[in-house]
Amino acid sequence: MRRMKKYTPTKFKAKDSVYDKARADYAVSFIGCLCHTKGTWAGKPFTLIDWQEQIIRDIFGIIKPNGYRQFNTAYIEIPKKMGKSELAAAVALLLTCGDGEERAEVYGCAADRQQASIVFEVAADMVRMCPALNRRVKILTATKRIVYLPTNSFYQVLSAEAYSKHGFNIHGVVFDELHTQPNRKLFDVMTKGSGDARMQPLYFLITTAGTDTKSICYETHQKAKDIIEGRKIDPTFYPVIYGADENDDWTDPKVWKKANPSLGITVGIDKVKAACESAKQNPAEENSFRQLRLNQWVKQAVRWMPMEKWDRCAFATSEDDLEGRVCYGGLDLSSTTDITAFVLVFPPLGEDDKYVILPYFWIPEENMGQRVNRDHVPYDVWERQGFLQTTEGNVVHYGYIEKFIEQLGERFNIREIAFDRWGAVQMVQNLEGMGFTVVPFGQGFKDMSPPTKELMKLVLEERVAHGGHPVLRWMMDNIFIRSDPAGNIKPDKEKSTEKIDGAVATIMALDRAIRCGNDTSASVYDDRGILFL
Image (cartoon, rainbow, N blue to C red; front, side, top):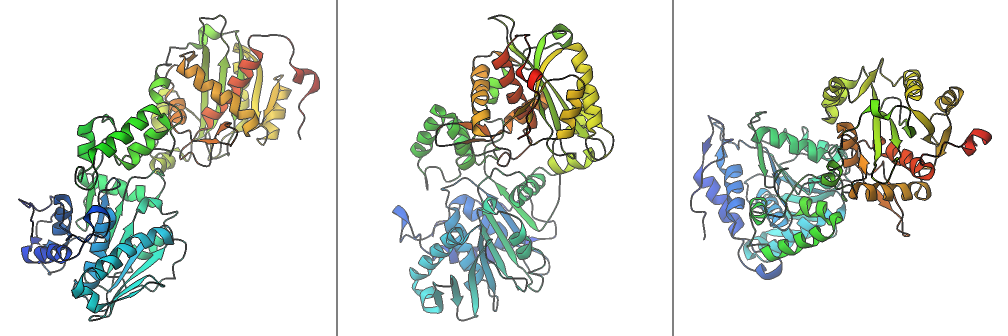
């Protein structure tokens, strides 16, 4: 049987732990007796690739002084088509049939039953192709259970949408595609205390990168990164992350090689090259390529705003130079505990002039520190730099914002303020009382699509000047776009993983600025007032 040329135990091996070669050899040999189940490799012995063997030897061969395994949790993050499902199925069978545990309970977990079935089917086929196991194992296809008769151990499929209540006595858990878990319920039930009665339970978590930075997978990814980079120490946690760094060139074949340890073995470089070429032609595919092929955590499934183009519009803006000019406001109040955005857009004075954007943001002072820790967003830095203002208390103080807008009205000729018609009626009435023309703005496709498309066009043409405002930049980068069958688009607050209030306010203000330009005649709303429908 093939062996990796030189094995060096992981740097995460504790000082008092030892490498037990016999136990590591046993685990590798057990997997080597199984067969691949799919494609060109079907029916051939499961010979571990070097990166896979490293993981198996580290997990099953590094032993504490008491004789049990050092690592209880293994987190493996790796791009697709690297042989994840096969490795997960092999580990599940090793824990069920080859770990010497009486009545071992091993569970295969995934987001839904279909996903969970993938690893189960691979494991079942491995059993069928191995005569020694086939004689000793019963496969219950209907209930998705594999029973190892000599020790009465079993491997059972569970999904996030249907799992029984507490009461598990877990020896092993294989979590496939952890990033697809809709919430943390199943993860917590399976990993918090369920294996306490066992001497060496193993939680084997395997996944590609995801998009949701609030998920249990991202939380675990951050922990793995912290351990790899030395910020945290947990001798029971084994982290492996194969992927491209944030600043790596995603079109570089060297970067592909770094992120894909099985490149040229399980997946041809021509496949990756073709996917890369396709992503270059279609920016909407870039994020999917980076997530699935390079294992990068990207913010949304479809990146809408090309940030390099946005950054080219960071032309300097000066409030003093804009005094007295016609402009249009966009107001997104969101919730009282959240960020509130007010954006002014100044239409161009001539053909060579640009649409100037002046954004203003507010956040409650009391919970800012908590939000910095929770969201990992530098609100405190932005506040110190003057890009974000705080209002007293734990909710946004609307009176303060009204006063601020009133002061802006003394400096600039604010012709109209567009607002979400489902927003705060009281504040709208107060602004009207100050003499502002306040215009309701629908958040559906009909109203949002034209200015959203126009914003992209103006950015690509570099006809926007935003001064490189970091809060607005962050929000632009967060935008997820929803489209309808007619090709209309609008920002989707639900799907966008972070805040986009400033971007929405910009789009609303831009709409009014394009429609009305520098026209100083009376608005229809001046005569009619607002109709609250």
